[in-house]
Image (cartoon, rainbow, N blue to C red):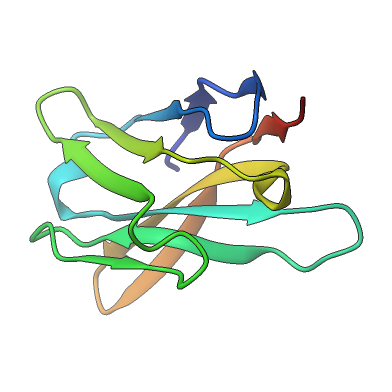
Length: 119
């Protein structure tokens, strides 16, 4: 079982920035693929960004160029820097860990942190 705790959400004005953090439990954090997803009211959860165990990253087109995902394996933490925020970025942001166990992978989720972009 991997526990994930997000922090850093809040209310920000359009054009502003936020940095989300996700602290993970476990001794093999460096082997996890980590990701950030978001879910707006009435919409499906969608991938925002992912960082693999080798630090290769992918981003949704909607945030490409405005966001950076990074990881600190020494701190068991993944970060999501969001810049030039827009009202449409408003959502609950969830941290995800994809954990390799034997020949398969398991997904674990945090409880979510609210990001609201509004003036």
